[in-house]
Length: 167
Image (cartoon, rainbow, N blue to C red):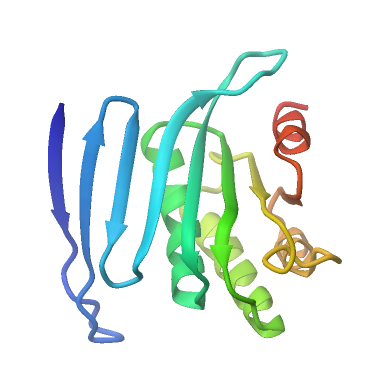
C-alpha cells in the first residue's frame, strides 16, 4: 500500500487554499479535495470492448457546484494524460442537486478549453454517464463541447457509454 499527499498552493486568482490528499490503494485511487468537498474515485478498469483497451474511469459524488464540475473535468483529463489513456468515462450518477442552465455552458466551455490547451490529440473520447436532472434531457452541455471540437458524449446508460468509447 502506498500513501501519497499532494498539497496544491493557494490559487492567486481566487485566493482560496486548495488542498488535495491522495491515497493510492492498489488500482483504486481516491481524491478528496477539501476545497470542493467532492470525493472522486479513479479506477483503471478494462471495459468490455472488442479491442480490450484500457481507459480511465472516474466516479464522482456530492452536491453540484460549477467549481466542482470544472475540477472534475480537469482531474479527468490530467489523470488520462498521466496514465497515457485516450479514453475517459466519468460517472456522475451520485451527484446531487440541480445545474443552472448557464453553468452547463460554462463547464462545457471549460472542458473544451482545458482539453484543447493540455490534451489536444491525446484524449480521443470522453463519455459522461448520469441521470436527470444532472444530465440535461437535450444534452446542452454536450452540444457546447462538441461545437468546440471535443469528442464527448453524455449518456444515461453506462453500457451504451462503454460501447461508444470503443467504436
